[in-house]
Length: 212
Image (cartoon, rainbow, N blue to C red; front, side, top):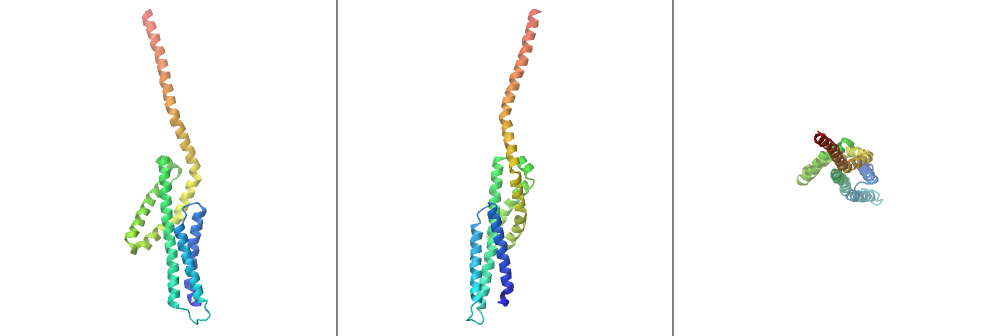
């Protein structure tokens, strides 16, 4: 058992970290991370298989090749789960930004969310990188690790910012729509008022000329 302590500790660390991320995003009502959850289930299954092999009392030494392979399987499942989390974050982020772009002006979005422009561009870049990872599989782990390190700490902060300032954005949009509705009425009133003033001046001038 002591022989595999390092591998077991590393697996537990990977598993706990990914499980924490899944729970975090689920609690924040983000995308349902079913692919990542399924990978965690598979990693858990392999962990049980490992413990079963190591706990066999009738074997002086467990099948080391099988144990090592189970460790590899479990760690790969955790890595794939992290990849799935990146995929879900990028898809969710792009969907949310597209929805905001359809409802609000760009200047309003940047004013409400200072990082909006940055994340709009970064998420498009991330989508291209994910597509590139499908073509160049030897670079896949490196690509996902770079995206993961940027998305996981910063994306949560950005979404917190969106949630915190969303009411302000909605109120600003309502005011803008109100003034857009009011503007033609004001303009029409000004036109009528102008015609009224101009008409009175013209009548006064005609009367002056006529009398003169």
